[in-house]
Image (cartoon, rainbow, N blue to C red; front, side, top):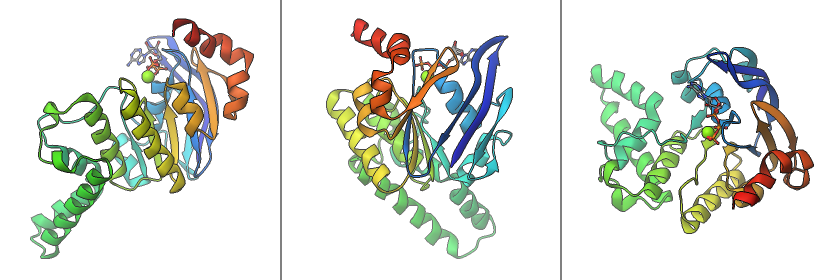
Length: 254
Ligand SMILES: Nc1ncnc2c1ncn2[C@@H]1O[C@H](COP(=O)(O)OP(=O)(O)OP(=O)(O)O)[C@@H](O)[C@H]1O
Ligand SMILES: [Mg+2]
């Protein structure tokens, strides 16, 4: 479904990604792991369109997408969350989730300019959709709270709700449980498994190996911008190169 082919990206002459290639299969959860600075977020940004790769090609459902600007992504069916949250702090929880419906909301806005009678009905539908998603994440009671007063865990869930409200086909998650306690992490893990069960294709960047091992069908490992391994969770867990570059170092620091 997603085909990453020879992607390279440099920042000021320093390589962040070097000829990275792998595929995400439809309906599968693929994890992208590796040490800090390995290039994981850079790759997510290239897929999401907020960065243009210097070389290589990205196809999504047989369409080349690496040259398309980020605002085209929702139309394609690609949604994302950000490693460093990117919510609008002064808007309410509900308004933030509504921003995830941009393509539909824009159509509704154009119609409202034309004063078409269906508009108010349409806006109500969008709100209902957003409220249903908030309910899914246990955020109904906080729908009218400004995001700025929410706990970090709640903000992480608002980000996921915003990414999911448009009904994407591909979900890019950049460290969805970083900074969360174990109960909150378990809740996000259950949500990822539910989405997987519903057939969504997911690319997950995460350092929490318990989560990665429990939700992934396939794991891709980056180190220093290069792909060093790719395989099933059990293969990756025991791969000497991955242990040396990443997993071994983690257990030493843990
Ligand atoms: N906008 C930028 N300008 C300059 N250098 C950047 C930029 N974004 C990333 N880098 C550099 O590119 C490399 C890869 O960074 P990236 O954020 O993709 O790593 P990561 O694998 O997501 O790490 P982490 O696990 O810490 O989030 C790092 O050396 C980083 O300093
Ligand atoms: Mg990152």
